[in-house]
Length: 269
Image (cartoon, rainbow, N blue to C red; front, side, top):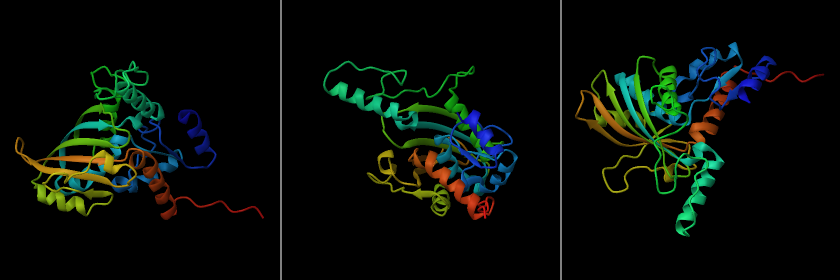
C-alpha cells in the first residue's frame, strides 16, 4: 500500500510520514527519530516522504545517541525481547488464545507465529536472509547505521516474547573513548526522550509492563562490561506502539510544523 500510494501522494504536494518499511533505506527519503537526527528531516523535499523506523530500532537509537556523542560508539550487540503487538492485532489475539488454551487444556494452535508463543520465546521475527539473519535483525543494523553513524558495527538477535505491549532490549556497547556507568547514567538522565530507572535493588528497573502506555524510552541496568575496554551493558524498554510507531510519527509532524517546513495552503477566496 505504501509503495503504491506514498509516491503519488507526495507528488501531489502532500508530505507522507510512512510507518512501513517501504522507504526506510531509500537514500532520497530521510529516516527520522526526532531525538536522534531531526536535522535530516529537511531532505524530505526530494520525494515528500519521511520514513518512520522499525520499532525496535527507534528505542535503541534514542538511548545510543547521547552516549555516541559523548564517547563514540564502535560496536553494538543487541538482543531484543519483542512483544506480540509488533505483529499486529493477530499477534495479540494469538497470545491470548494460546494462553487460554493452555489453562483449559485445549489444543494450542500456532497461526500467526511459526511456533507456540504462549509461555515460550521464538528467536525468529520476519523472514530469514541468506546469511542466517532475519530481516528484523538486519533492519536494526541498517537503520542504526543510517540514522546514527555508518561506522558503527551492529549485530542483533531478535526474539518474540509472550508480552502484549512493550519491547525490551539487552544492549552491549563498546566505545572508542572511556566512559563509566556513572557518566552514562548522568548523560542519559539529561537526554531527550530517555528516562533512567536504575536502582541496584529489587524492582529498581523498568519492565515492558510499566512502559505500556508511556512515551519515554526507559533505561535500566547500566553497568560496565569488564570483558572489553570501554564497554557498557544496559537494558532498554519502550512502548513499541508509541515510540516505535505512533508517537514518533506525531513528533516528526511536529518538527515539520515547528520549523516551518510545511505551511497550510491559502484558502480559496
